[in-house]
Image 1 (cartoon, helix red, strand yellow):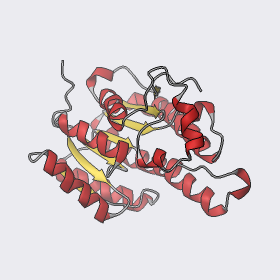
Image 2: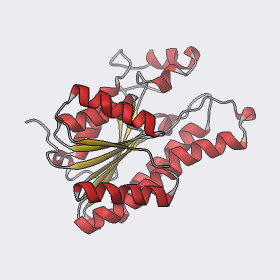
Image 3: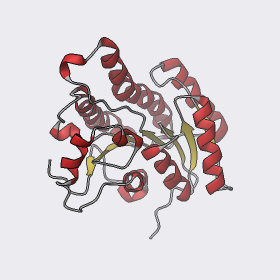
Length: 250
């Protein structure tokens, strides 16, 4: 049976490239109406053009609110509701990685990763939940990482931030469950994205040797997991943080 999101309205943050754009495409393939949120309107619109080239009949739009600004996010979601009437799915995918040695961390480095990897997830979830509560149903999917379980050799604040995402996921699932809102997370392993391409080979090579499925993950692998969690196939799953890592032994 094909998974369908027919007539569902989904917002995907960080939806302009990599895992985010793969999620956008999977949702569109499943017949959802999709709103791409990017860091800049220029990149969001470029992603929308690319999406329409692949799916000429898709119902989609592009936006670029500041994800850490509660007013901007709230107003952007209100605009989505004015256009589509509802918000069914929020994929909190926007985030950044770091491979900074402990002694080199600056206040700016700390603020950047805390803002985008933690605060943005909180702000967007809060705004989306307000609309989902009115509807009595909804689904929030957060992008975590397997390093939230195991840590990593450099850039300690990246796994720390993703551990916070796991905590938000589990706690919000308990708080929002009585309102019919499911909250889950996917935890990608080593995945072929721009973020991984920026990591030093010394970090990536040993990880690949520990993957039983003997390959690096693709963005589409993560998108398939997100599609499952967004669908009615996962209607009794909430509070889960699902590794999508090829069975990596870290």
